[in-house]
Length: 577
Image 1 (tube, rainbow, N blue to C red):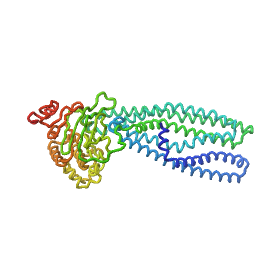
Image 2 (image 1 turned 90 degrees about the vertical axis):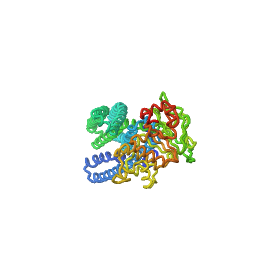
Image 3 (image 1 turned 90 degrees about the horizontal axis):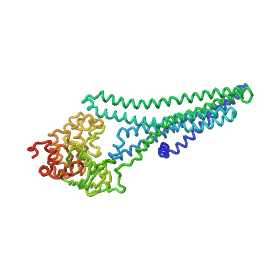
Image 4 (image 1 turned 120 degrees about the horizontal axis):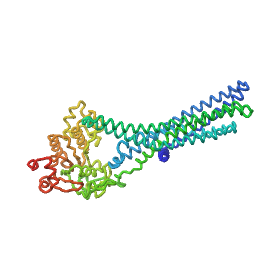
């Protein structure tokens, strides 16, 4: 999975990678040649007392060392640039795929996990790519070249290498084999920590209101301890790796000096050759160390690559049409025929057999008990998820065949939980219409009953809004979300319980202003509050995902028991009449 991911995203950078490999090759060859020069200086210069030989070959060593440094710096530079570019591309691919997900896929992964996959997981793959370019490319060349050069110096002494390399390989492979499942568990528990932390930051007010600080500390502590336990287990294995490698290195160095001394004593080897052999042994071992470092990173990077690929391989249930419809009659007629929706694997559908018609100039209201499918019904229109049964039509065209940009311009949704982005009042209001003028923004605020409080802010339209709109009240957040949709000026307005945080006076004033503003548009309102929808042209009553009644308020009061129960739970008989 890791190799497939890297192969895909490294393919656009073949030229920089080729140049990087060339630099690494030159740098490694220079590194391998330096011990041989050193041996020649010792044997031919120092032992023989030839100062001219020492100076001339010393100058060559200096030149080769400079070339080695230049090539190494160039290789690291191009490696870092390429690895950063790969990380950027993978992050962009994950982000684009997540943006295409419907609410169903986002819920399947969970927001904390998607954040971790886009940041930490991509970072691990990027670091592996960087280490590959800067270490692994030169490691095999160094290892093979060192063995060849050592054999050229003394074949009998090279028998030590036959014992060293297999022992190192087996030791590292045994440790790496146990690391992989631990790294998988580590990433999963990191998701859990992110989820718990995100919930606690978002629900800080609730925690304080119910004085659940101690409980939440314990919950975070449990998740944190689980991550620490796995990290410690991983750390213990990683801590074994370097001592094992260094033990093998030191023992092999002792063996080389021991057998090399006997070879020199018997006249079969020169002192300079023994020095060079020790240098090549260290180069071979260093290459194995570099490979070991990579093996330490690879299991975690493999797990991260799998998690990234899970996102990239997941197709959205909301698929853009192959040949989209790019024009509509722009009347704003909304119709649902036999609409239904079922979550994958669910025993029962959330919606079934929904028939609904909403026309321009009319207000259609949807009411029902909690969990009856009201919000899901509205979500089918802007394609937050697609109907699994039936059709959703806008101006007679199935929304699944509409161009997404055209659908977004035609349908304006004010969600049940209005979300504001970090920025200013103006940037949030212009989210649906970047070209809107200040006059249009103030008009939308006036209709949404938000002009007074925005004008009272120190900077007016340029007043800052915190992420999620946490620096304004719930009612102000709802009114700003409504104003944002009004600035968009769609043909179809969908209000998903968008007046729940407003007091009765503001609710009445807002509905009165909306009636004039949306006189020629189609308006669909989902509400729990009967007073919000009692004057609607058509009221649709939902119960357990089915339409159990349609009509005006007085008609449903006389002939629909479900609607009557909802009304009388909020109003007296006289008020309802």
